[in-house]
Image (cartoon, rainbow, N blue to C red):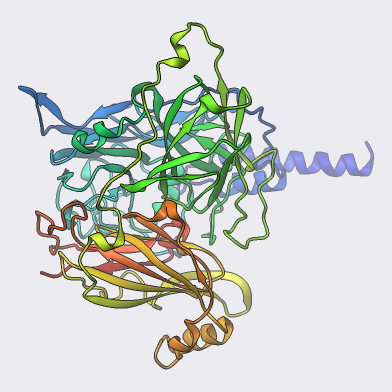
Length: 590
Ligand SMILES: [Cu+2]
């Protein structure tokens, strides 16, 4: 044996000993074998998969109808949805991965969970049940403010993202519970949530929201789609339906070679994985006919933005974004999706010049100025559409769907009443005193979640928020209950001077905000001009956002009391930022 081989053998032997020890060792409280992690790092086998792309067919998650039909009319029902630990095959050639998943039963739980299809104005009751084990499958950082149960278990609480519902059903970060409701957070009040579904039709999703665990619990798999249908609005649009109406839930992941999901033990400012999954499969393919398809594309990644295109230049006809349709469809060849953002598009594969079409991604990370550029062999591709050979003559020609000429009348900024309050919201990033590149946390207005509430909108009104981004990255602003729309994006001049003043004083008046809010105006993309649930806030800008705390479809106040405890929150939807601690309370007033 040469000296290098001897050295390698010694490392392997030491590693094997540590692995063996790790196997025998009882699981630590953090649910993570630190020593095993060390071995994985030593052997540098974090994510060395050489996966063949486009070998797994794109799955569609089961659809659960969130209402019953009784004498021809829709009526309320109650569902029970559990959270289970199981394994999931992300790729034909990968070992099964331990995950947490939603499902109506252990057998039917999937990654992502089942899609709930609710009906406008038909309340849906859901009993959320935690069947998770005593420890999390992923490590979490005790330095971050986190839900800690007395008796072990994994704290969970479900938030219906984009839902208009009272605070007690919002899935407050403090309303968490563990298995069989053994331990409950201070804001926990009930086992069953009631979703009124009073808002306009569109695409929502549900996911975990427990204090300090959102990033790891979504990474583990607690996420799924939710739709509110309203046939009066949607039937006349004549959109592709049934087998031609599909969800694409995109999420990046990093894996150990044993199949487990990789995340650093210590909180990191952003989680990025180079393996791109869609509906729980790494780089899947979808066989399509030469016809129009409706694709509801959700970016469920923790921190990764996507800038997607189709390899043969086919356009996306955008009909909606987040939980609202547009005023009229917008045709684009690329779409930028922040975490939690949804675009509802029609793609006409009958116009394809090729039989294989890859969905590509070119978004740098962190977005938009990060050093990392997607690798065409890895995160630079998302999935592939393969056009089926015609078997029957009518396979392709029976497409009566269309790209509608018009959307909805309530999507425009001017359809809601004028704002009654103007607020300034400042996004900060803080660094370690001895290391200017090590992010220690990100805050809004210099405050954290437990600091007293400062945003108290009047229910039934609209407001104008000037969101000042003093960090180097884009942040997706998400406001619970409210819907939002960017009015104007303006670059800040002398941003360094302004930032250093703000970091010291946290005062827009003393730091002469008005003298800095005079840079170039960046146009709001046409495909984002509707009532959104996340608005991308570019770095070094002030983005003016109109926020509606009412039902935009009718301009009516909510038909429920939105002012009760435990209130709502607003936050950055980069989950690593939300957890530490780019999140603030939001309390509506009468
Ligand atoms: Cu952020």
